[in-house]
Each structure stands twice: as structure tokens, then as C-alpha cells.
Length: 541
Image (tube, rainbow, N blue to C red; front, side):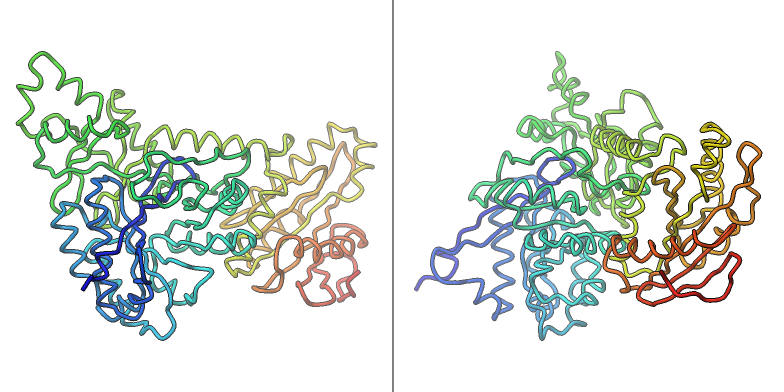
């Protein structure tokens, strides 16, 4: 009688990094010739556990160095309390658990959540990384998703037609310290949409279909100008992690040479201790140069490779690209091309980053940022502010959006001259920047108009900084008008609706003589006059 293993084959689909254009990992997919072993595995946790081990061993037989994704149903983990046989198989193969990501898939209905969380904790203790799979097209509760705190979230590609949902998941991932991947990407338009929404990883037919052999090459469309969202703190290291070539700290120079000559894309090898902590870094060019000398192979082949390595340079997965540059800046110039090891909270290597990737990303972010700055005030334009508004809406945060402008500015320019008008605009911009604190964002959207996004508690200091000042231009007294809309969580769906709520408030503020401030609340009629001649509540309009 034939068993399910007799008709079961496995295919490999690359997980691509949309930032670097390289393959970040391989997902192992079961492909039975007959029957539906996955349906059986959904009902039989023991079978699903054996399937995970079989998938991993199939990848080992292909001798790939790439990190691996193994699929397991949530119910299996809750029932088995972990995957001890998989952990044993990983160790027997000489791989490290943190090179394997467990893709936890739906259904979650009727799965004991506490048992699932305990099983995930056990897997993490063993070193495995956790991915929440099938999000957006499955039944994963958001509360459970946050409790799982996965290192990766895989989003169903159908949600690319709903960019607000993808941006919302990206915001959640940022809070969790997770990466966002989109599955089922089939067209370049979908790839562009995934990038624009902030996904760092993706899978799909566009890049490479599932195949019996791990893909040697993938097609990743280059990003179009403005396709990558600019991070407020600079690009995160975790977005640019490449697979690391790891060998035990006891490896010989001959073993390192065999790995490098058999893998021309590998730029270096990290030697790690039994816990996976990098202890030496072997740079490809310097190592091969030493080995290729007249007596190099005879001298070094059987000696520890560590003698030809350097102390590793390491950064945490939550570091920014700027912090990596600080690490690279310390030390000799001959090591500027060395890979930097990325480590987790336990010091274990989870990959490497290349300086060229980070420099390119930083340059692109600065170009994008500079292109959006107003040349007069050097403040960002409306796109930066509205993008941040959408992020706060997706995060469910309360915020205040304000519109500030100069009263009768055309008369100021006509009477005092455009140079005096420009000086006034620059001075107002500086005052707003100096008053900004915490999460406040200030934008100059053209002419005499400014947008300010802040937390509600930051409104009064901001208003005082610009309305309690005696402004003048060319000897002429000038006043400012401020309009603010308070947006509670769920009160507006996007920045367009927030702007629509703000427009009548600006009109009301401009109708008051002198310095004025009108405040309203999204979804609530009427407004409050905070500054101006008439302090009584007035109807909106």
C-alpha cells in the first residue's frame, strides 16, 4: 500500500526583497501527485507535523543556502505544542533554527489561542522565526495577530486593490517590528502597488513560479521614482536583510573556500558559535586572495578559517541605515565593502546587509525628500503631511490637522514688496518648526498656506507660538488665521475627508477680524472660536 509520501513532491517559490531585488528566502510548497494531503493535514496535526519535516528535508537535498519557509497550520501547533521533530531535523542537517521561518496558516477558528501562543513561544525559544500567513483572506483575529508578534506578516494579494488596508497592515507591522510581505503578485502594477503601500517582501508568478528546483534568478521590476515611502527615521535595516552564508566557528579555510567557489553571489561568510552568534567575518576577496597565493592553499586549507577572518560588524534588526553607517565608519577603510551582520535580540545572526544597498536607499530617500521641500521654507509639501495623516488614521490614533495662513497676503506683497513677503513666510515657517515637538509635522503647501499635524494636546502651545506674536512685513502689521479639525479614531476614513472637514473651518477663521483660531471636530457640526473678536460658538460654514 502506497503512503502519502510516495506521491508527494515539493516545489520552491522565492520570497523576494522589493528593496534589494534579491531572493530573501524560499517557501517550500507541497505538491501531491494525487489526493489532497493538505486537506488531510488540516484535520490531522500529526500528519501536518510530518509534512513540515518532509518539506524541510526536501529543501536540504537541494543544498540551498537560502533561509527557508515551512508551512504549518495553526491548529497543528496548538495541538502538538511545537515542532520538536522539525527542530531535530534542522540540527541534524547542520542548519540553524533561525534560518527557518514557520509560516503559521489559517484556519484559526476553534483553535485554542492560549495553546497556540504557548507553542509559538516554544518555537521562538528554539530559535525559529514566526510568520503569520494568509492574513487578509483568512480568519486571523487582529488581537491574536498582535499577540503572536510575528517577525513577518504575509498579506493576500487581493488586498492590493484596497491600498488603505495594506497601509494599515504596514503601520501595524511597524509597531510590531515585523516585515510585510504580499503574496500572489502577478503583474508589475501589483508590484508597484505593493511597494507604494510599504511592503518590503513579495511572492508571486511575476518574480518566479513555484518550481522543483530553487530559482537561480528572479525578475523584480525596478522601483519607479517615488515608489518607495520615505521613513521618518531613515530606512530600517530589516528591510534590506540578505541571506547570510553561515559556517561553524570551527570551519576550516578549505570549507570556506568550497562554499565561496560554489556560490559566486556570496560576498562573505560569517563564522558563528553554537548559539549562532557571529564570531568572525570572512570577506570573499581578501580570503580568496590569501588562498590563491603561491603557498596559500598549502598553508591555510586545513587551518581554521577564523585566522583569515576579521571581527564581525553587527547591528540589531531594529537599527536604521544611518546607524549602520556609524558602524561602518569605525575601523579601517579596507573593510567598507564588508557585509554587516544583522542580529536578533539574542545576538544570533539573521542575515547581512550590504553597504551599497543602504547608501542607495538613503540617497533615494533624500532625493525624494528634497523634491518635496518648499524652496522658500525648506519644509515638506502636502504629500508628506497627508501621507502621515493616513498613517495615523490606519493606526487608530487621534490627531489634530491645522491650516495656517497670513491674512490679506496679496496686500502684504503689493504694499511691502515680495521680498518682505518672502521674509515673513520664512519667519512663520521657522516659528512653526520651533514650536513643533514630539510627533508634530509642519508642511508648507504653497504661498502663505501651512499645514500642521499634531497630537491634540500639542495644539495650545502651537497656537500660542504663532498667534501671540506681533507679525509685520515692511512696517505693516500682519495677522494670521488658524483653523483646526480634531479627528478622533474612526471619525474620518482618509486625509481627503480630513481636508474636507478643515475647509469650512478655514473659511470661518478668515471671516473673523485680526488673529483668529477656529476649532471643529470631524463628524460634529459647528465650531468653537478659540481666538478672534467673537468668542461665542458659531455655526460652521
